[in-house]
Image 1 (cartoon, rainbow, N blue to C red):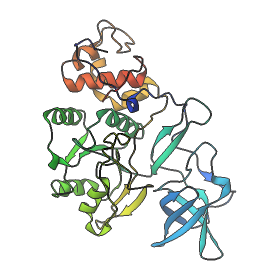
Image 2 (tube, rainbow, N blue to C red):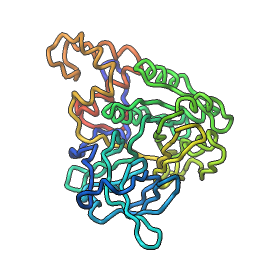
Image 3 (cartoon, helix red, strand yellow):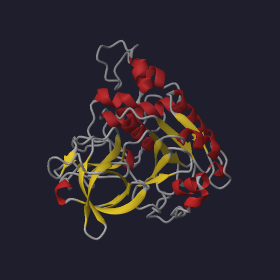
Image 4 (tube, rainbow, N blue to C red):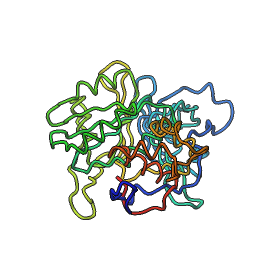
Length: 347
């Protein structure tokens, strides 16, 4: 398909509009039974199904989620960063009996438009979302950036892009895309875990926050964390170049982990690499949270209640079509809003 500027739009399966059912992103507090406020608080470091590692009193302990807390519509009701109430059991084990209210949560929708689709939380109680990407290996994919940016905006979370592996070389096209995101208020970092370039600036941004590092498999999140905190010695891996890998990398982190850094009050959540990120059904007014340039241009549309979907007099189309970044963002907005039928590969 060609847009009105004549530029062919390339689509990618993972960038198709989301069709998942609605699900409450920030779940209500979970209680195995009433009157649990007197139980001690712990912070979830890592969760794998019902088995977790928690921090309590400065000590790491294993804990198992109470059966009554396993929500039918959530793949994991408790995630890294959650505050929980625990009960001591015989044998030095703990049981998680309550999940405290979350001040923020970031996750994705999984499944299709049936009763199995659900919101899958990645991390809770975070202060900053850092999407780590690569200029070439795996490929730079702004479609994924748009969805993460929108999800973060819906939670009122600051969002940053970290272009890792800058030692591979950065094309003018990628530079232009990053400049475009910077113009919308997104913080941009350029780093190399191999040469330590830019790592000091990223560390400053992470200080005194709980930050989620996320992105495609193979972008070097674990390598980047090893550069930030050499003592971590996190497992790393190379990008899979076989047909099945499609240059998207392979997972070296298998579940999200809350990691304390040596900086005061500084934590990062190292999350597994993703191959797709579903936003779920989203109202147009909510989607706009991730597209501030669409909001700004829409004030000049000549049509009342303009849908920015090729209507005459649409200022959004006229203004965003002036740059490659704007062309991408308009196509991405329309894709997520369902303005055009899905075709293969917006990135």
